[in-house]
Length: 114
Image (cartoon, rainbow, N blue to C red; front, side, top):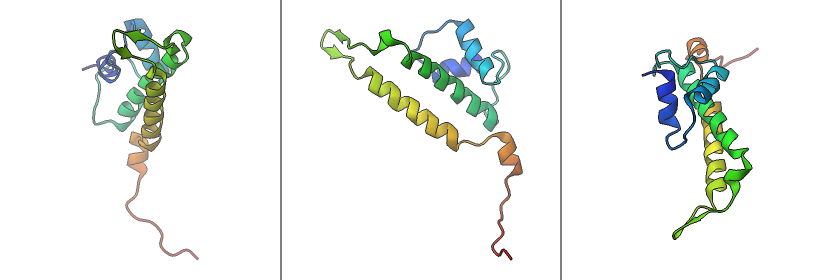
């Protein structure tokens, strides 16, 4: 699976051109056709950052913020749900560590300080 495929999994239901997805990945330090490494914390974090960028772009599009009514289904809560998902991703990304942070992490701390 490539980074592009993994981003498509994370953003199911959002239809963007491959060229647009490629730009989002490159802006977050990923090459679209490189192999996705699920063991890499940095790679995973950058995929989530790319997905967040896509959602923020959608949120900045005024035409998606209208109230829609389709049969008996109201989609007026689209913006609220989108903003909730953006907030969830931001919290998740802030709490994730990179490969470098995991590597430099120690399992002990100084209990006494003089």
